Length: 433
Image (cartoon, rainbow, N blue to C red; front, top):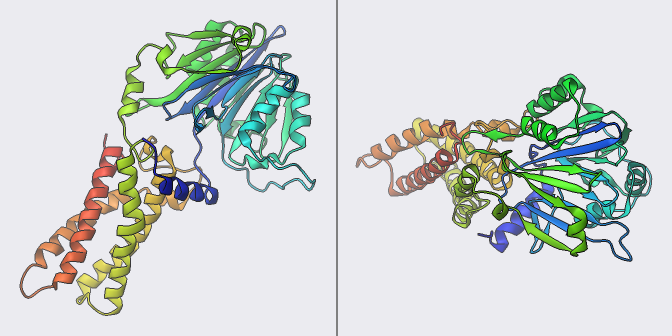
């Protein structure tokens, strides 16, 4: 179900202000005796993987095929990987923004539409040198959270980072979610999927589909407890202009596409889920509800974020200022609630923004120490606070104790925390699966 218009507007505005944690993806390329193969793993929690084909026209020099799962409009998806009819392949991987990088002093073109921009590269370029010249005209630091790699039929590759581009000629190359210009190999090996692919290609190089499938499988992700991970694997063959796809980290079944045949049929798109056998892990993923695929959860979290927690915090602050919270114990609890509510507002906002939090082990680890990482411990702290609230609430009903106003405030705060704890428990944010 779709988010409401108001929810979508608020979240999109927030996305412009915050850096988002990256989705884990990986890729490799191998060249043997002039033959190149490229494997791309899209690791995502979306349920809409597609492949689409765009044919050449009088104004579009080259036909191209793309894969992707992130829907950007009714009939459009963001390209994650692809290849054109000249054998030029690309892959996109999320990454942290490189630090201490200077933007270009040249006057560059702005990227107005990232989808059109990315597709235009494959529609107009044949070699990595042409890609470099194309991108050099634009301020590609627009993609501050992405690293791209382009590989042409010769096996040359171009790494496009937010602030730099590098051409390489190594026979094998592996990339995950990092910028290679600022990431030494010993640090890159911390990414397990990178390390496995690199080690495998160091022991053997082969361009057969069977070997490439083995490399892709070794670099795939299958995370407990939701069985999420590699949504789609694509293995591109520039020689035959063919792509083989594997769905949801299952490498027993593949579907191959003859790209020349598809391009001859004109522009069209294919939803991939129905083409593959039913996958238990994928069905489990579809059943797992978060604010990203549940309108009810989204509305509930929005209400907690923008109404319940702010109002409670304001009321408690006013009560403290007016000395309604008499007694050291109650005053101390009120201060704890104010601090907890403010931190929870931040954390709930992050939960509405960052889908990755629901799928990585709890407590969530960010790229670097951050407030988000710190707030990921809040679910653990809330349990004793709720128990304390219940004790205080029960005692407040004694005739000599607190007013009805205090009891109502404490009751609403307790109920809000209990609802949040129930959601956190369901999402696995308490480390219990």
